Length: 275
Image: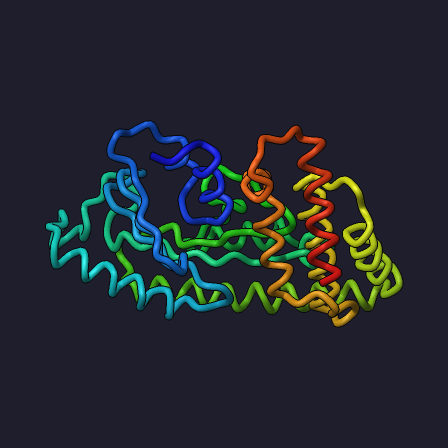
């Protein structure tokens, strides 16, 4: 039995979905590997959902590990499968391959140059969908967008991965161009934005999770552009998880008011950035 706080921690670490965290289904459960690369959700929107989560752009590696886990389970379980329609999932939008591949991308350049709407509209025309930080039904925070395949019936697993990978590479190229355009248009303003964010993170006494996410996005933009490289990407990535509300309560091991949580969050960020 997992308490509500621990459920939310798992959501913030992207190990379970918000839907599973809210579930009261008696058979709802999750299995998580020791390294947290693999999580298997039971009785979420489908009976079985295998997830692999890797840092960086490692679609093929994720697919290979997921496929090996799937093969192991399929050797013990009987999946509902139709020769024409593929895997018969409880959720009809997953019918076919049952494969949902996703990449989390940081797109501050496209947001700041106001190109993001056009890019997201184009994505929807090629069989992909854009979701927020925690997947379906959530919003983008800190200029982080989750891009996934929308179609699971028809194309093979390899075709799904190839299509998503190709589109992600194009988006990354567009983001880099947008960042350079920002720098060329007003380098001083970009440097000021980045350095103000860094200064606030280093010295603030109160930080909400939303503000911290926004400031970390600005610092990451500065790292991308070579303006401010003191904070390794790994530290930035760790902070994105540690600053979330449930994680803050788990770290403190106590119930906290929102104001106390903001105080503890600011202290945590200061400590991490000075170490």
